[in-house]
Image (tube, rainbow, N blue to C red):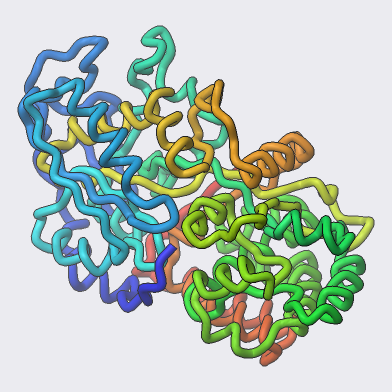
Length: 485
C-alpha cells in the first residue's frame, strides 16, 4: 500500500483525460466493439488490427501476438514490490517472445503518473492498478478506456490447453472484476486475499490471550491488553482508513448476509441505514475508544511497525501484511490472522466467516500499443509457474488453482489457509463500489475516521453515508453499475 494522497476526484479525472469526449465515439484500433459510455459490448476475439497483433493465431499464441512487438508494464510497487514481475512474469513472457522488449515501471502513484498518459492516448499495455492513488476504473470503463478481458478468460490455459483460462481460477475471480452496464470483466484480480485481525501469535501465546470471537470478548481482551501498556487495536487514519471500513462492512455482512453489501454496491435505497450496518458501526465504534487519537495522523507502515515492536496487539488488514512487513519484522514475531468477531448470536454468518476474495487489480488500457501482448501477459500471469513464483516472492496466494502445490508457506499464510478452511462456504463477498464510485469511497474514508475517533455516532455514520450514496445515485454524470451476486 502507499501513502500517496488521492488528489484527483472522479470529475477532475474525467476533465483531465477528456472522458466526456472519448465516451461519445468508439475507440479505434482495439477490439471490434469496445465499451462506450453505456457500457458497450466486446468481441470474444482480439481484433487482428489491434496493437501487437498480426501474427498467426495458434493454441500457443491464441491472440496472434507479433513476436517482436514491445510491451510496456506498469506495476504498483507496494506491499508485493515489483520483483515478481521483473524476475518472473516478464521473463516468462520474453521466453515466449524472445524478440520482444519489455519496458517496466515500478511506481506507487498510479493515478498521478498515468492520468496524463490516458489524456494523451500514450498509455502502457499492462497496469497493476493498486494502492491509494489508483485510477478511477469506473470512469475509465464508462469511457471505453479499458479492455474487456473476455478473450483472456476464453483462451486456452498455458498449463492445460484443453481447459480455458477461466476454468483454472478460484470461483468468483472473474465476477470480482466486473464493471459496466451490462457488466463485463475489465479487471483481473490476481491475489487471493483474506481479511481479518492480525496479531503476533508468539505474544498472544506468551500472555495467554486468545483472539476474540465476539465483541464482548473483544472489549474484555482489550482491557487486559491495555493493562499491559499495549494499545489493544489500531489502524492508520491518515492513509488507510479503508482498512477499517473493510472491517465494518465485513461485520455488517456477517450480521445481515451478503445482500447488505450487494445493496450498498447497487446504491439501493436505505442500504447504508440498514440495521446490520448500524450494528456493525456501533460495535466497531466501541473498539475505537481503545485507540489513541494520534493514530488518525499515522500512515499504515507506522502502525504496522508499532505492532512489530509489541506496541499494538490487533491490526485490521489483508493477507499482504506479512510480506509487506517482511524486512521490518523482528525475530520471534509470528504473524497470524483471525476472523472478525461476531456481533451477536443471531448473526446470519458464523464467527468463522471471513472475507476472502480476489484482489489486487490489473487492467489493460484499450489504447495500448500492444493490446494482444497485454492479453498474453495476463495469460502468462495465470499459469501455475508464474503464480507459484508470485507466492514464493510475496508470501501471498493467487487466484490460480493448484499453484501452491509443493510450496512451504509462511506462518501468516498458513493461518490464512486455516481460516479459509474453517470458513468453508461462509465467505463474505467483495465490495465493488470502491472501484465504481470513487467519490463515495473517499467520503467513506472520512466518515470511518469520524466514527472510530469518536466524532460521530453509528447512526450519524450511517446517515452521512446514505446521504453520500443518494448524491451519487442522483448524479446523472456518474455511470451506474449493478451486480446481482
